[in-house]
Length: 523
Image (cartoon, rainbow, N blue to C red; front, top):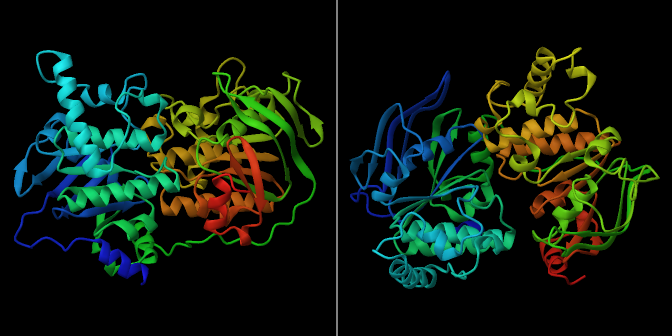
């Protein structure tokens, strides 16, 4: 059976045309100063379907959904739910008409239990205990009906990311959501967690719920959705039935040009060794060993990819090599020079001066200060460089010119370096970080999840930049949970499991089955 047939067989029939859509937006407009973020946006979502909303970062897709959920107010236009015009001025209003939303960055209180998080703001009853008992019974039913099993008494901060996402879905369903919006739902999930999420969403659809997914991942759109709305530069450019389109057509509609959906690169020609790690052990703040005596090397002119299910030590390894996390023991040599045991050289500040760039996994918490302007973020870590400093004060004109040049080269939108980093979409925040690190011309680039939450056009751009850096003779150590990305970019692939390196494989031998076995600890 073909993939198209499988997708068609897995979907419910389209509801009768006479039944009003679950959700409509009619000529929605939204301005942010001079930026026209939504331009007469009209979309229709039939009841009991999974609907995709796709577009480049900054295309306006998150803005329109934030208006539907009440986080933002439209400047003009109308919202209709089940055929009835509604006024949505807040998330409470949205929930009142049956609309729930699961955000890319979860809205959870880590020390609270799952049950406490779900109840927060919706306690009900005269006493908290009575409300908790009712909630426990209802959540148990919802979890069973939709495959959302999670320990209600577990602190949310102790749960893996996939389970935290299930908590967010439970929150929305508990509050009566019939329409569920998910913003980049697989951006922080492993492939296994993403598959589980798809099973949940199909179960929701089978029960008559309506699901809207904001995403950039075309494979997921093709596998999961019934209809797709494509946005570009604030406007809707297409509304199509998913079986009637293709990944290539959607990519071209999103970007406005043909997009290469593969990484175009020549074979690597590695030369001398830039990084060598031996016997490296790293502990987390609780004293738990996360990196367990591993060894690896990266040569100039190659990309070494580290694959593995999230939480198996990749993050701690990258942070340790970037000087952000202390090492317990082991050897780290950069161009033959031993750094371990020399705190004056083995720290984040010193490593930057030694030619080590770092694109962190979490751009918002580590790569940027979101309350700073894009101009200020463009020199983070290099702010004491003479190029940005006058006799006494920061040379603001030089910083602004540097940021403007980087924004132009990396197609960062909007091209306004004075805006706070928080006001840029996730993909454009990533471009700010990439430009800052790559334009310093590092000898070794440590890269964590480079395209997490990034649209198809930006992914193509980022991949080309990394390959170009490799071809300039730079050494790149890449960590990604996206197996397609690891296989496409890497010249050698190393797999981590439970803090150990369990094996190395050439990209042309790294099929998903083999990598999956290695990621499960079967070398």
